[in-house]
Length: 116
Image (spheres, one colour):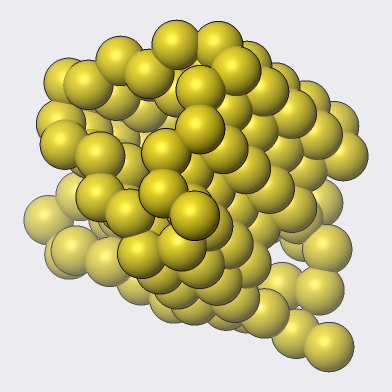
C-alpha cells in the first residue's frame, strides 16, 4: 500500500511524494540532506523538513511533522498528528504522544515520555 510523505522544496513549499518503501525516496532524502535510520518507519501524510535526521528503529506517526534541522533519536516514537519544531532534538528512546506539539529549538532528553 502506498503512503504519502511531504518534503520541502525551496521556493515551492511542501510537495507530496508517494512511496511503498522509504528506500523509494532515497534520492529525495539525499538532495535535502535528510537521514533516515535503519528500521525506521514514517506514517502516511507526514512531513519532514530538510537537514533532519531520524535515528535507527524510530517511528513517526501518521500526519506528523518533523521540522527542518531536527533530530529524532534512535528507538524514539512520535505519535500520530504530532509536531516537532525546527531545530529540535528528541533523545534516544523517547516517546512523544499523539497530537503533541514540541516547539522550535527544544531539546527533549533520552528516555523522556511526553503525552499519552
